[in-house]
Length: 109
Length: 358
Ligand code: SF4
Ligand code: SF4
Image (cartoon, rainbow over all chains, first blue to last red; front, side):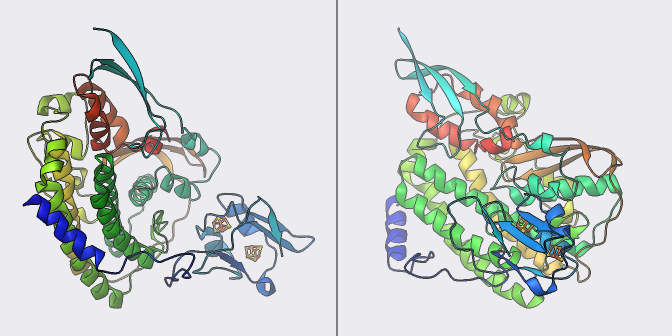
């Protein structure tokens, strides 16, 4: 009895679509509201450094004098804490993911 | 009879995480198991002195990937106790829902690993296939698949919109049907039974004396489940611990299978009763005092001990995780078993080594 149970299931599932997508041949389906890539909008930022101070992983670096904002993509864990604390709403988490990076480096904006 | 020592781990096909056992073998029987742990100690408890209590939540959630939701929740509950904050009821219900979703995905993951451990690849893939759909619900509601990141001190970060609820419930119904099919195989299949029945038996007294927790304890007949303490929404939603009496690997598997459906039922009830309103309140000030908080993780009872002195950093943060409590029982039942049964016994405690070593 037990054996047929499994065969029936295997057959049923062999005939249905897989729940996973054929990445990288198919692009990843973006689920709305997913916490993905951190997007920085330069225009609103006042370089207050709050985001850099609060980031739990130290992924952000903000130079107040030089007006520079930088992120280390390999450190960012997409937690969204910086988005929450930014007084100017210049940070946002997009649903998709950042392009792969190979080395630890800060992207300056 | 000559004795041989066989190293088991830290890298072993059945081990998802590194733990090392020196198995002393006589013929094919294990006579002694000497463990060594510490391969992935990350010093997370010490980090509490560096991160303020809000930032530390992100660390607490990362003690373990699979139980992340409940780690976050327990940490928040502990800090809220210290700060005398009462969380809005809607947030409490949302935490419960996410906690149970995480239990379902953790148990399905475990069932898959178990099937993989006994060489039943097809069943392994099917368990994970269902888990994938649970992860989709989690991602749609929390924004991430494994590390939920939705709890915060004073409430939760996201709400589940009322129009999304019927969709989630319909998906859960269909997931439940699939789980029925898969658990039937786990519970009735001859080869699975042959592999699990009568293996690694722990008596009720032994399990209790050695301080086992969670499904390990319940499979030996002790009805202990921290959800009966009534934390979060469990004060409104009663939970009857699922127990078995055999105490073997099969019983532990059966307890987890039944808990899947219990969790689905809890989520349904929670969605039925979820009150409208705020999802978080603003928390100001710093925690002070000392507290102990206990909750039920998928793997068993977790104990958080927090000590704070009124600054933004915690003074002491200590976690007793379920796997740590289950290790002594595992070491007790390994001697006397067949070498071929070692992977099954190790797997049925649902070892989470990153929890254990933090
Ligand atoms: S917190 Fe916002 S405004 Fe301040 S530096 Fe960061 S991005 Fe700019
Ligand atoms: S999302 Fe989190 S980890 Fe990433 S930069 Fe913001 S605060 Fe840091």
